[in-house]
Amino acid sequence: MFPTDAITIRLDNNTINNNVAVNVLPSGTYTILNISFHSQSSESSSMSCGGVFLVRHYATFNTEKSMAYLCNNDVTAILDNKTSALITYVPYNLRLISTTTATSVASSTVSTINGFTYGEVLVILILLMIFTQAFFSELKQWFFGVRIENPMKNKYNKDL
Picture 1 (spheres, one colour):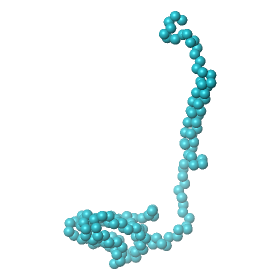
Picture 2: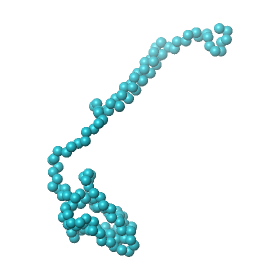
Picture 3: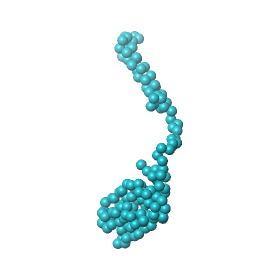
Picture 4: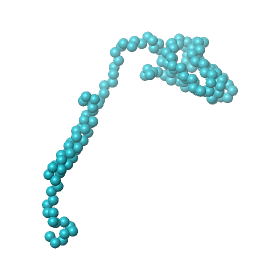
């Protein structure tokens, strides 16, 4: 997972039969996290930092390289025709960041009881009451039976 302040740049070359050299980032300190290429041609594309090749792309499928490369020079890309590239970086030396510093964690506004939110506990209690009432009413009907007020009186017997 990338840091929250990571920056992604997309480069496109939609020209036909032209290789384009692009200065992606000016001179500075960068930690390059990820580079990916997608091409519709079989020509080569590349990305370099101060003359050091980071990624070379030779085919029509996707090429992706994850890294944590510290670059103290400018980053340039050479894109062939119908090629796009993505570069994700942070504008500082990621290796100098201490991993033992205290980080603030956003507090949650959802209160929980043993892993259940108050809404879930309320729904469980309401369903428990409904099923308990249904169980005991069925048990009462089974034990005492169904009471009929006047078994002789019904809507078909007009004599009574």
